[in-house]
Image 1 (spheres, one colour):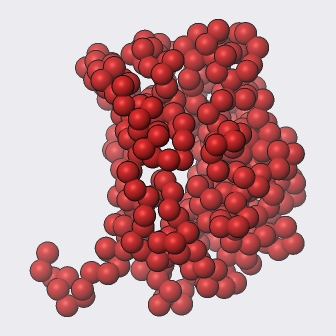
Image 2: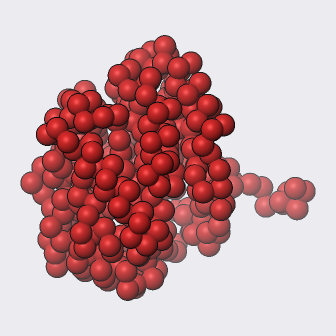
Length: 356
């Protein structure tokens, strides 16, 4: 298997890259779209960026919002006609709480558009599990607790929810085995000593991949890094031991346990990724990115409530350049590294390209 988490994926879409600049009048479809179909979630994780008061993500989110069924089918039809390559369902809420997810993924299953989803895993059962197992490219489940008691404390859910999720994951892999099943371990001070045992347990039930990520406790990088500083030796040691013990060609351990950038300033004045992976929210607004979803002041590109996504996307290229990252994005950005690479690629001197 090739590299799943490489930041070089976008460079396989050269025509798209060449179209990004404002100097190029062409508007090509996004490569991927993140759709947040609902803002409802039955889990109440203390660190959830959409619920924690000290985290800005989702500041204008309305919990009761969800995309109407007809609108979702229209969006999927548009994506198919436009040539969008993939759709990822995410939150907001948990996509598996969306009342029309079955209809949506059934339609996607018979289209050329690949699909995937993030979820807490408690509803990964029945018809949805069967469809995802057979047709989805990947599914990623977030886990923090290491047993029923700790999981219940993390997420304010009834006792037994952890056992239910683990059984769902094990059963899911036995349906067809076609969907790549990943887990992200959200690591903090309480569960840090259990990283190794969790990795072992998850491998034993058939999970394909585990990503170890730090719990984000503050939007201030220094505060977040200070929180994790004392945990680094413990967590890193367990990750390395787990890699030595468990990693193989069928089981990937991805170490994403890292500090945040000390500074969030950006040197570029327009964001390439707005045109590569936009976000459609449950409020039927289109947002620039995951980090600015449900931010009506800084992240809103426009509404598709009364127009199709296809018409909105191709209507006016200027909308992609009203965000100036050097002024508007002085915060953590998931694609900052990618954006810098793309700007460097587009700014290469043509007279000297042959001198590689």
